[in-house]
Length: 52
Image 1 (cartoon, rainbow, N blue to C red):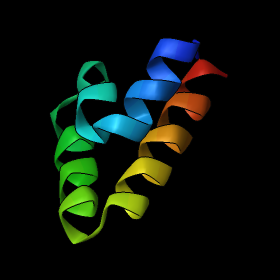
Image 2 (tube, rainbow, N blue to C red):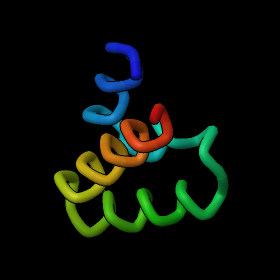
Image 3 (tube, one colour):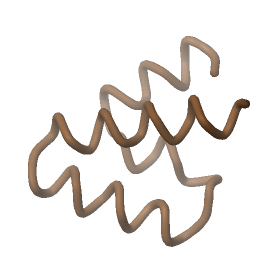
Image 4 (cartoon, helix red, strand yellow):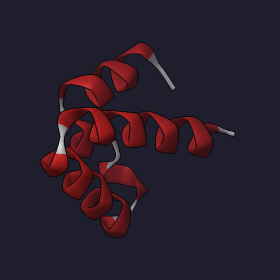
């Protein structure tokens, strides 16, 4: 995960996982709507796990 993707996870989490599939985007969007922190954490974790 590059610096740009990590920054995108913090600024607008759903956009950072747009290439991971529709279900992932919906989950991150729901978490972001519930609160910015859960959405940002989920986006970071999804991108870190997808890299491995």
